[in-house]
Picture: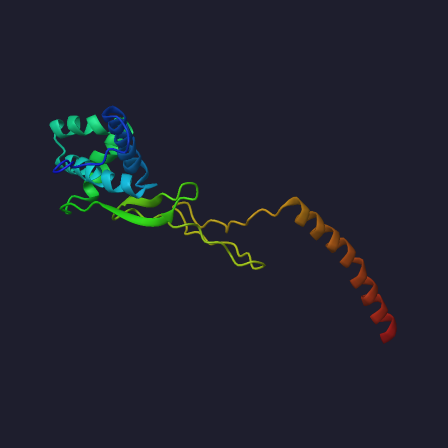
Length: 183
């Protein structure tokens, strides 16, 4: 019986389990959202939140304790910089788990685990088909900029040139025919 023995074992040795969660915490800090199994996400949540709390403290001792878990310098700098600033006024609850269904191969329940208050990055908007308009940019210090046009593929450019050459002689003949009829 495992009474009062907290934590999941995941069928791994303690060293393997420790390495697994070091990698997961580091990935969560660098990417701010990762996809993993639901059981790993639930176990990761407590380890990640304790590490973020160390980042909020900001002391040298806290940095050394966090370096035990997060062993990449870039991730550690992000933890003690932007992430600590983002969660400065928040008392816990830094992560969110979103269930996403079962994995196809073994039907393991999968989930996203992400940091709350994540910086939202909007995808660039696509113009409507057939109505590609040039975007206007705000003028810089030097003056107004010209609108930026998207380059057309070669095939479209060549067909447009052929169409122009075919159309240009026809209007001249029609204009000459109209003059003859008037006289």
